[in-house]
Structures are given as C-alpha cells and as structure tokens.
Image 1 (cartoon, rainbow, N blue to C red):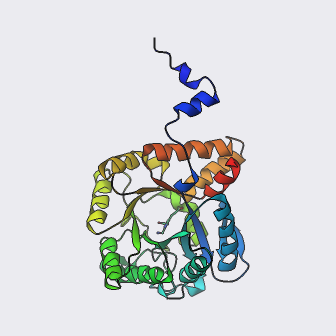
Image 2: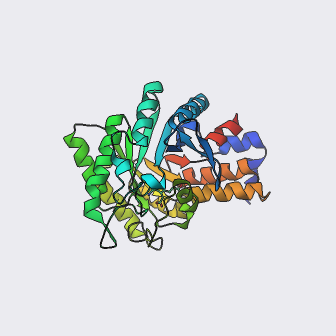
Image 3: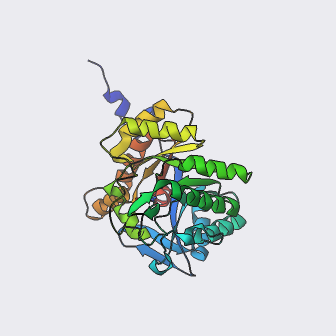
Length: 321
Ligand code: PBG
C-alpha cells in the first residue's frame, strides 16, 4: 500500500507539496471604460465589476497598483446613439480607449496595457466586422481593425488584443504596426469559441448582435484541431502572445495548446459568464467564494496558462491579504 495521506497531513505539508499556486503577476485585470466624468456604475449581471469613466478608472488603477497588479485589459463602451454601421467611434484617435490609455500611461507608466481590438462594441448592429449583404465581410473589416490597433498603439498601448476572430487579423495589424515602425505587441484571441459564457459581457458592453450570431467567425466548440490551426496561423502571422477563451470548459484546449506551442506565452480568459456563475453561486450560499475562485484559477494554471484574465483578480488579492 502506498501512503499518500502523508502529503496531506496538515496545511504546511500540503503547501510544501503544492505544484501550482496563484501569484499576483499571473493576472491581467479587465476594465470597461465609458465617456464622461465621475462614472462608476456596477454592471448588474457582474457584481463587483464596473463601467468607469477615465477619471474614476485612474483612481481604481491606483488601488490595483497597491495590490501589485500590473497588467490591465481595456474595453471601450459607447452609447447606442454613438454607434454606427462601421464602428467609427472605435477607430478615432481620441476614442474612449485612446483617451484612457494616454491618461493611464501619463500617471502610471509602469502599468502594462492591453486593448481589445474588435468592432462589436462600436457598431450599431453589434457585429465584430463590417456588414455587407447581411454578412460579415472579413476582408473589408481587416483595415478597420488595423487602424484601431494603430490608434491604440500610438496612444501608448503595450499590447493590442484582436478579438474579432477575422481571418488574417493578426497579419494586417502586424503589417500596419511595422509600416508605422511601432513595436507594440500583439496578443491574439487565437482560440476563441462561440460561447454562451459571454452573456454578461454583452450585457456590460451592450454588444449583443442585433441579428444572427457570432458562430460564423468564433470557433465551433465541437472542434479540436481547428484550435491548434488557429494558433499556428496566428504565429505565422506574427503574434507575440496567444489566448484561449473561455477558460474552465476549455481546459483541454489550454493543455493541448500549451504543450504544442511552449514558446508563446498563453493567456487564458476566465470570461464574464464563468465569473458571474461563481459569484452568483457563492451568493446563493452554494460555495465559499474565495475557495471556489481559488480552485478554478489553480485549475486554469495547472492546465498550462501563463497568465489569466479574470474579473476576480482584484478581489482575489484583497482577500488574500
Ligand atoms: C469582443 C469580446 C467579447 C468578449 C471579449 N471580447 C464578446 C464577444 O465575443 O461576444 C467576452 C469576454 C467575456 O465574456 O468576459 N468581441
């Protein structure tokens, strides 16, 4: 009989044998940014997550810096009246994201900023690309994504993060950055599945597609090989870091991709639906909030994540202290 219980005798022993842990440098913390002043609105479906105007965002960032978080991901949100067919407000040089990036970099140059590159938060139809004859036109969308990335890059973003799942998006952004002699890095949402777990995010960003779905560009969750091919193709197109999204239901893909592509830092996104489920479950008394998040974050890292995008990052560190 092998004696395994010796590894679990007490907390000290368990800590000694632990192979995976969560540290503050694992986290990339997502923020939703809106126009205006003094705005800090909680998102109803995502308790503890807010839409911030830039002034309030700066205050919150000073708090996360004290906690040791040094990486953030920014999403811009605009009103329905500001949206149009091509998502113009997302590609302006003074878009809400560019304003936020400039302001953050001025005050906290040490913060590493990732910006989301997609049209869905800025288009009146809520789709990730341009609509042509009721379909998303992949190739017409590429220059717009490249322009958005360029604007974020000159504003000071360290990474641009294309999430539109348009074919060739990494290549067109890379080429544009190269032409402009910018060394901004690209984190691609390489294996992004068409997932119901994005529900609360679309509520937060008001980006539900007004017709159809995202299934023509985001991946079908019944596939395996395509995920590996998507990553390989992003690498060919010049990506720096890669991503799998969502997290928990896709840990098999996290593991496969981390093993196949060990030289590319793998970011895993614990998405809005995952966050909301755990929060709601804890609120309903089904489990201990801190423990359930700890377990899920460890599982994500154990599968092979290098970094984790999590709406729980801030609370996790606060609760740890
Ligand atoms: C934009 C985008 C989405 C998410 C990140 N970037 C929404 C979507 O694809 O519908 C989802 C993130 C989350 O659920 O937390 N394309």
